[in-house]
Amino acid sequence: MKIILDAMGGDNAPDANIKGAINAINKVKAEIILVGKEDVIRSKIKEFYGKEMEEISDRLKIHNATETIEMEDQPTIAIKHKKDSSMVVGFNMLKQDEGDVFISAGNSGALLAGATLLVGRIKGIDRPALAGILPAYKSQLLLMDCGSNTNCKPINLLQFAQMSTIYLRNTFGIEKPAIGLLNIGTEETKGNELVKESYQLLKEKSKELKHRNIICLKLTDIELEILNQAASSVGISRSEYLRRLFLNKPIQISYEVVADIKLLRELVGQYGKIGSNLNQIAKYFNTGGTHSQAMENEIHQCISDLFLLRKKVLEMAGDFHGDTKAHQK
Image (tube, rainbow, N blue to C red):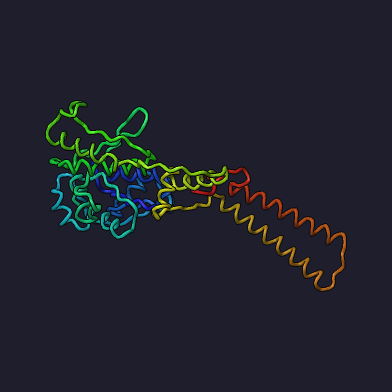
């Protein structure tokens, strides 16, 4: 995954953004691209960590952008005129598939304007919205919209509910998220006309927001374990994994070898030495050499060395201890 980060957007930028990116680089298996003034970003990294960026991680990159959209800028005007701002450049990178997600803590009005004007809306969605994860007792609570729209219609609230459902299902694995409408009371008759009309619309469309059809699938223990590992490897539920297979939707799987490179090189070198010894033995017999105790001992030693190396490789790969996570991301 490639994360495009607006390094210059936000009240405490670029300091907080840079520190957050470097803190995250060791926690997420992704490449993070800092978009902003390269000289400033490099100077800050050197100031904070006493190292060059390349010394910290090869998954940390910079994409230069010479302008910044400030908090007081008019959103639409800023998006149209500050073509080389970190936000506009980030949006264009996302549109051109140079990353998988764009993150900004900058001017929220400009963020929404850029998302609409530069990236474009999803088919069937009239307005973008801001979503916030709120603390909850047992599960994840998502509030949408958090301030991007002042005057909504019932259809907009329905679309917010649809987007929230998809987000919770795919991000947190909540198969049947509950949808609520924030109001002054629980009765259907309470609230203004927008809320009352939205409630009726949500009630009518509630079945469309849920996966209401259930199918049963019988699996052997081995087949179930394969399904569990496959779903776990891509971070989604078993139901979502099967649903994507049925609907022919892409399932992105990436693998990362987790090993000591120096040790791997040593093992490769040892394999090479054993191979050379076996070649010498084969050459000896092919040229008329006779059996001897010394030659027999050499063959047994090569076989023993191969078994020891095999054990080391399996331990590094995780298979020896049954730890699939050691080599699968």
